[in-house]
Amino acid sequence: MCGIVAYIGNKQAQPIVIKGLKRLEYRGYDSTGISYFDEDVLHTLKTAGKVSDLQAILTNTPENGATIALGHTRWATHGVPNDVNAHPQTSNSGNLVIVHNGIIENYASLKKELQYRGFTFQSDTDTEVLINLIQDVQDKEKVKLGKAVQIALSQVVGAYAIVVFDRQKPNELVAARLGSPLAIGIGENEFFVASDATPFVEYTKNVIYLEEEHLAIIRRNKAIKIRKIKDDLEVEPYVEKLQLSLEKIQKGGYDHFMLKEIFEQPTAIKDTLRGRLLSQEGVITLSSLREHENRFLKAKRILIVACGTSWHAGLVAEYLIEDFTRIPVEVEYASEFRYRNPIIYPDDVVISISQSGETADTIAAINIAKEKGAFVYGICNVVGSTISRITDTGCYTHAGPEIGVASTKAFTTQITVIALIGLYLGKANGTLSRSQYQEYVIELESLPDKVESIFASQSYIKQVAASFETSQNCIYLGRGYNFPVALEGALKLKEISYIHAEGYPAAEMKHGPIALIDKEMPVVVIATKKGYYEKVVSNIQEIKSREGRIIAIVSKGDIQVKELADYCIEIPDSSESFVPILSTIPLQLLSYFIAVKRGCNVDQPRNLAKSVTVE
Ligand code: AGP
Image 1 (cartoon, rainbow, N blue to C red):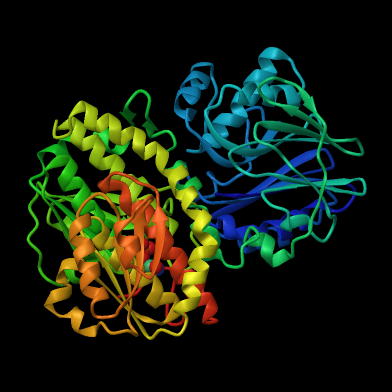
Image 2: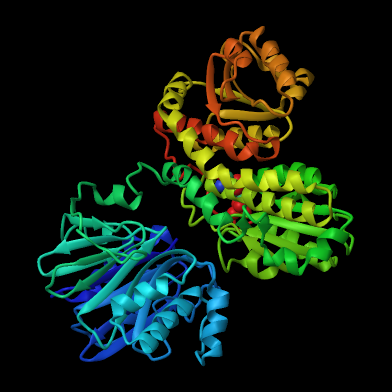
C-alpha cells in the first residue's frame, strides 16, 4: 500500500500535496517524493524516510509557484526503500513522471523487452518499468498521453492506482486504477487526485471514486473525462458528496486501524497470492524457493524462529509443512533460541517470521543461525526491513502497513505464505499427490472470499462480546491446527482488552486448567468439522458439565456443538490445513468488540509497541 496525492488548479500545489501525503502516511511511510512543474521546469525531489524528511528538503529549495504537482508516500513492494526507488519515477526521456500504488506482476518481462529496445533503468521498481512502457507507447504510436497510458495499462498484469504527468502537456494529469483506490476531488477550477479523500476534504466535498479499470483525463479548467481502459468507452463521471470526518477517512471509515486491518484481510490475502498462485495451471511461483529448492529438499530439519503472533504462525507452519512435506519442523521462540546455545546443523533451514522485520529477538536468532552455517529464509511484511536484508532469501507477505499494535492481517498472510511454501515443497518432493496438490491450490484461491463471508457475523459477534465485557479471565481451546489459533485468540484478547486469557490444546484441559472452570469462566472453543471434531465435542461436554460458558467457533451447518454451546459463530468449511486463516477471524473480532466495550485503546494498548526492537 502506498499513498498518492496530485493537484492541478490555481493554488500553490506543493503545500497541498505535502499536507495530503502526511494524511496518507498510514498507507506507507518508508520513502517519499514529489514532482512539480514550475516555470517550464519539471522538478522531482525524493528521499528515503517520512514526509517530514521531504518537507525538510523542500524548505532548503527556492519557493515555487507551481500549480501542478504529484506526490507519493511509499510502502515498498519492489526494491528497498531508498531515494532512487522512491516515487515519482521518471521515464528515460525525462518528460514523464508517475506515482503508483500497487504491484505490476509482469514487470520483469516488460523490463526485458524495454531493455532490448534500449531503455535503461535506475531503480529496482516495477513503477519505472510502467512509466517507460508509457513512453515507449507514446514514441511508437504518436498518441496523446491518455491514450498512451491506456494502451500501456492494457499490457500490464497486476494492480495499480497511478497518476501520470507529461512535461510537454503541463495542463493535464492522467489517473487510472485497477485493484488500488483513487479518489478525485473536484473543486472550483481545481482537481485533486488521491488514494483516499483525506488530502482534499477541506477543499471540496465533491468526489469521484474512480471505478476499477477506469482512466481519468484531468485538464486544467476543463471537465473530467473518464474512459474504460479495456473497451475504450467514455463513461459519465459519478460525483458523490463526501460526508466523512478527516479522522474516519484516514481509517477508511473504520473506528480503529485494527478493525480496518481485520476487514482488509480478504484483499491482503489476495495480494499475498498475487502473481504467486496460478490455480488453473496448478502453478506456484516463488522465485526464492525455486532458486534454493535443493536447500529445502535436502534439509533434515526446518527450524522456525519468531515472536508473538508470528510465533503462532510458526506453529501453524510446523503442522502444515510437516503434513505437506514430511520434513521435520521445530518452532522456537526467538527470545529463547538466542540464549540457549541451540544445536544447528549446516544443512538445517531456518525460517524466520516477522511482520515488522525489526524484532530484536528474531534478528538475534537469525544471526546465531547464520553464524552456525544454516540457510535462513525470511517471511516478512515490511519491505527493506532488517530481517529482509540479513536473511539469505525470503518472501514478503505484501499485507500492506499494519498500524494497529495487535497483529491481524499479518498473521493470516503469514499463514498464506506458509501454505504456498508447503504446497511448493510438497509437490517438489512428491509427498503431495498431484490431485491433493491441485485441490489445495484451488482451495487456497477461494480463501479470501471465505474470509469475507465471515464478516456477515459481525453484529452477532458484537452481541456475544457484550456478554463478556466484564469477564476477568477467559480460556481458549483448540486441537491440531486450531491449537495455535487458540493461543492467538487468547493473545489478542489479553493485549487489547487486558482480560487474562490463556490458550491450551483442548486435550490438555484435564491436566490442570479444567480446575478453573466454573459458571463465571468463558471458554472459547474452536470446534471446526475437519480434524478432531468428535474429541473437541467431548471437551465441550466436560466444560458444560462444570457450567463453563461456551463460545464455539464451528463449521457452517454444525448441529452437535450448537446443542452444547451458549454461543456459536459459524465459519465456512475448509480443509484442516487452511482452517487457521478462517477460524482466527471471529476471534479477532471478538477481542476487538470486547476491548471497545471496555473502553480500551485498541490501536495502542498500554505497555506495548508495534515493533519490539529491544531485548
Ligand atoms: C501481536 O498482536 C503483537 N503485536 C506481537 O506479539 C508481535 O506479533 C510480536 O512482537 C512479533 O512482531 P513481528 O511479527 O513484527 O516480529
